[in-house]
Image (cartoon, rainbow, N blue to C red):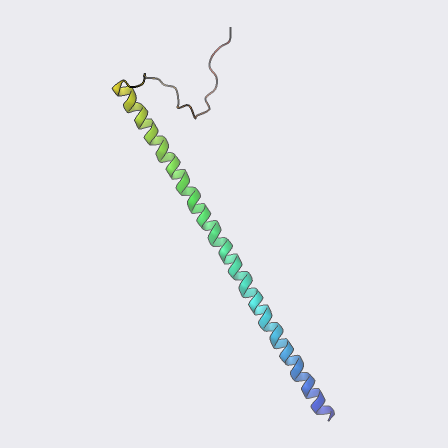
Length: 95
């Protein structure tokens, strides 16, 4: 009788341990999935940042070419001043 009781308790403990192990595996799997998702999001953000920087560079190049063309055609006066968005230092002297 005592042996059967001990065997039953062992089965219950064993079943409980199996459930705990399965839960831990599930939690780890979910955690890894979340970490992988975070890494993928970071990677995509980095790629988007690179694309934005490339577009900014291309936009600057197009604006320079447009300005040169406009100056050449006489649409705007020729100047060596940078575009308005480049925070140039104030070179005007106050009297």
